[in-house]
Length: 341
Image (cartoon, rainbow, N blue to C red; front, side, top):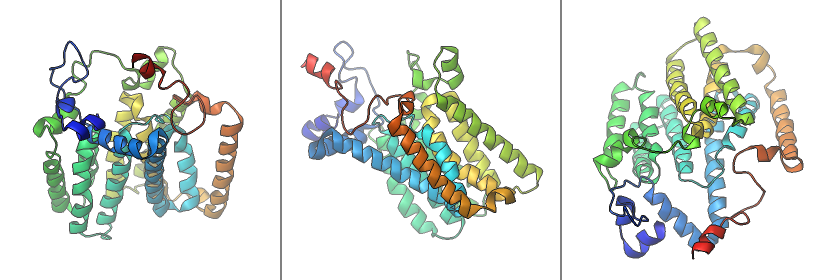
């Protein structure tokens, strides 16, 4: 896609069923066309290995943002324990896909709104950070609506008017795509007449009923249950505040996405790191927070143990798409393409 767009400036490739012989003129909305250009440029410079390293860097940057948010709430040790629990969920999505941009942009949005609510960045700076990202986001991946959702969770703060204005600006900025209003509304329509039960679009329970099981399914249930329990405990102890409401709205939205579609387990894992950190901080669990220093070293031990198990056993291959280690294409990845050529 990126090669044809840059070479011919032929936008039919993103507006029609370009690769079809029998239905080539069928109208299509390619909501991730800019990702194709970015990946093509990277491929020209450094091949598939370069794209792979770029994808890893995107995910690592995202992880560090969410980890940093959690760390600022409960310090490195406890935050690291939560992060280690979420990492296997991130391994659900190791294929190189445009959704990595959504993960990164979601983290930047959450960090920016938190800093604004803490009066650490100005309203002008908030707009300068978010509006350019939103324009890029709406053209790189369909999860751009998460920008609206994250902004919406902050509406009940003392900065209601400015957050509402930011939300309006984000919606207007999202019109800057080749499809204008249709591109903005595509997330509401994409599953209509999908015509095929794609596995990643099904719920965990649907997959389990069909005999598909992975350890991450149980980890997801565990973290979801932990989130529910900690929210109930925060409310029961009368520790609830605006941050609790914002945290609850955020957790609810991301959890519903993961419940409905297994493809969202990774983004659920990212968000659970700061969500659980905030709840633990609100609960002031002395037994947990008293040993912050020890937890930091314990998390390092767990990290090295996990790394050792990954490279010395077959545990890694229980995750989807992990068939062998390495950078770039797997053996045989291009065989079908070569056959057709």
